[in-house]
Image (tube, rainbow, N blue to C red; front, top):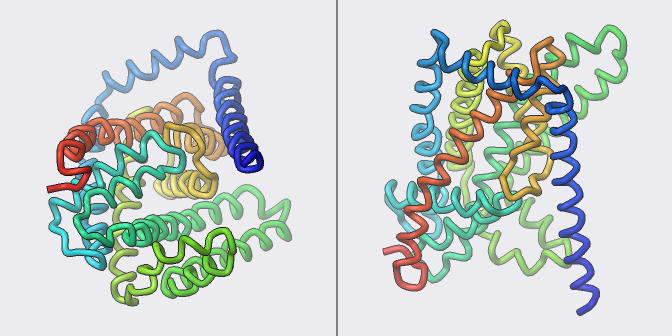
Length: 329
């Protein structure tokens, strides 16, 4: 019992250290200069008064498209447990988004989607949620690898060709491994079953092995669709905040940012806030861009796609609580 309690304290302590360290680095990078806040205010005012203001509206209009594609994904994945309409799938996504907003690594997303199902076997849907998130990770890594490749070839190839070749090889191995796992989910279930402490989770993940190649292909396409919506929104916001680059640099910088964010575990209660901002400022800094302008675009992306939809999702969470014992009507 004491061992379990100590492990819990260590886990909480470890997460707290990472959160505090992230916030400290952000503070050092952004707020150490005495005129930073004044500069940031000028950037925000300039963006709202510029001729590019419609780009903010366009980015906002893409929010329902983004989460609409995710609902379509969940409708396809959840049908292995029970048949669900698109509207129910959308509601489940919004509930999961809101619950995930306040939990590390968006773990509340699992609970939100599961609670919206009526089937007695709804806990088996945990595997369906996982495979959907895994598909999104694969999409992020596939495109993000190309973005990192651009930085390697442009900035480091001439001085460090051997290191660049090693990185390219690792990226290739990573992409192949993820695709093999995605289209052979039985292997993922077998890996979980091989780990003693995780073996009890197999019954909740077993559903992953029931998806066909065609079903996984469709889910991956939807994940790529969502990914390019995210990418387009970020680029529009970068343009709004006066970050001026060529198309290849925009795409490479954003895709590499998403890649780095995806491989760094989210430990805060504010989803991925902090990790993406640091990644974006570093990568676009390599391209000679002002860190406050990049930060403004990144924070705006977070507000549009996570904070605002999570607030809207509170309505669906309230409705969920009003139904019978948390089961949606």
